[in-house]
Image (cartoon, rainbow, N blue to C red; front, side, top):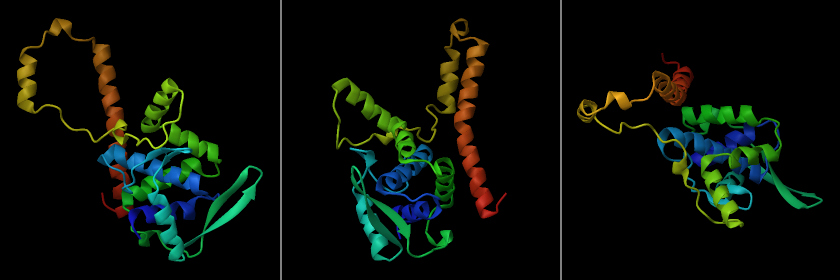
Length: 217
């Protein structure tokens, strides 16, 4: 079971409501967004395109077919007034520790389940559409007045791991040329520091979760 299959199985198992294709891929996408913020790449390896219902990668089909072929899940077709859809159900119960999921990825997935438990499909879509990669596409679509189907989402629009822009020597050189009369107010400085601390806090929280999951201090 690869990372994508493990994440799919985890969501099907832990969401209290039945998931269809659209809701499941959106949960996977949200997990990949969270992972990208910390590591600069998607957890599942998916490359998302603008589909009719938002972010999508056709590799999703291969992963769900593999889970079905392994008799781990089933996919049931249903009909409604506007057409038909599909729902997933477990056919074999597997312990979370056997899914091969990274502990931090599992923690992120658990947060997503907590946020979207018993929510309708619109809420899943709203969450996906509110992400920076999707917002960028939507803004361009609004300007062009048309859907950009097939457009690859730029995941770099998400926050990447923080890296120093300058080394210590470069900072010292720059500080000698600063005009202190042109600097911002103490209020502006404090505001900037608080914003940086808020951005860093997410990494601290995730490290603490890993410690908690592994029993380390």
